[in-house]
Image (cartoon, rainbow, N blue to C red; front, side, top):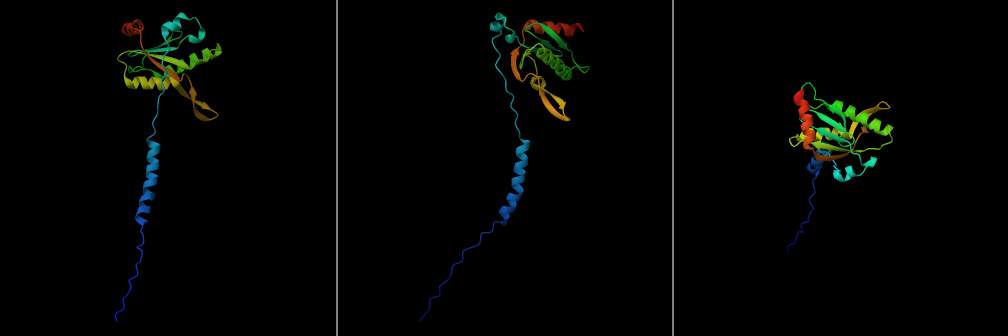
Length: 180
């Protein structure tokens, strides 16, 4: 008689060393890329109705405004009352350092008078470049200050609103540019 030999089945081994090697390399690379792909969001506030505000004589409704011309910028507080004109740098660009210094002075003076102000309206000319808007927004929000031997961001006016510049103010600042 013939004996049947029974074949024993062996389970194949699962070799995952190449997969583990891939994960060891891939995970740190993906984690590093997450740090570099940080997205910053700028939050804008909707401006209040200016006509309604000008009809109300309340001090809290006075707005700090920054008019951005082609070469110059001008600070107004309250609306329409010129505080300071910020001329262009010698190379014809906006002077953001002088803007930050002026805003720090305004913030100090407002705090001295007991006025807590966190909002600013940016009055933009129709031809204002996008990069100029973003740089001005970053400049008016905060500035770098040294506190206890470390560099921190100090708050200026974090609530930013964008408005179209009135034509009379634009004409005034552009006439000043042409006169120089």
